[in-house]
Length: 313
Ligand code: PBG
Image 1 (cartoon, rainbow, N blue to C red):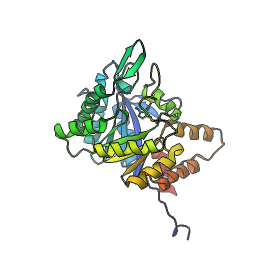
Image 2: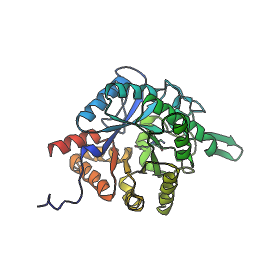
Image 3: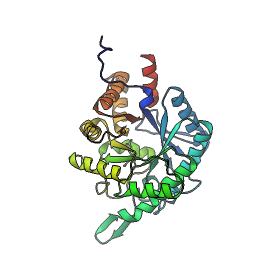
C-alpha cells in the first residue's frame, strides 16, 4: 500500500555521472577527497562510462584536465583538446550514451578563474563580455566532436545567448543547452577543485557565482538563461538548495537538473567510512529528496552505486 500511494520515484534513468578526463593511457589518478572517483585517461573513462551505462545510467558529464594551462584557456576550445578527443571516442564506442560536456574555462586557465581576467592597480577583474566568444567557441568545438548536450557552468552574463548563436551559426542548431543557471558560490565545491585542478590562484568566484543568501535572484538568473535559449536549467549545489530547486521547477516548468556536488558526496563517504551513517540509505534518501523538490535529472558522483542499489532494491 505504501508503494501504491508513493508520490515520488527515483530511477537510474534520471542520473548523470560526472567524469574527469586527462591525457594518458590506463591512467586512474585517485582524488583524495572523493573516494572512488579518479581522474581517468580516455580509455579508462570509456570503461567507467560503459559500466555506468550498463547499469542504466543514461548519461555522463565530462570535465577535462589539460596538460597545459594558459591565460586564454586555449585548451578549452582546441579541436584536439582532451574533452573533444574523449567525446569522439565515447560517441564512437557508445553511440547511445548521452554525452554532456561542461563548458567552462577554469580548468584551462593558468589562474583558475572561469573567465578572462584583467589585473590592474585596483586588483583583478573578470572580463565578462570578452569571455563570451571563448565560451561559445568551446561549446561549438564540443558539438563538433559529437557532444549531445553542452552545459555552460561559468556563470558569465549573456553566455547562453552567445553559445546558442555560435552553435546555430556553426551548424549545430539541434544541440541543446543545459545551463548551470542558478550556480551558487559554494564551499561545497572544494573537493571538485582538487579533482579538476581548477582552484583559483587568487580571489574567489563571488563576482560571478551567486550569493547563497539569494533566492529571488536565482529565479532571475534562470529566467534570463531561458530567455537566452537554455533548453534545460540546473540548480547547484543540490541538497542545501532544495528550496531553489523547488521554486525553479514550479515557476518555469522547464526540464530541471540538480547537481549533487563534490562535497555532498565527500561528506557521505567520510561519515560512512567511520561507520556513522548508512551510505546506501543516506545516498538514496538524498537523491529522492532532490526528485521530490523538483529535479528531473540528478547529476551525482554516486550515479553508478545508486543505479546498482536501485536495481537490487
Ligand atoms: C567549473 C565547475 C565547478 C563545478 C562544476 N563546474 C567548480 C567551481 O565553480 O569552482 C563544481 C562541481 C562539484 O563541486 O562537484 N566552473
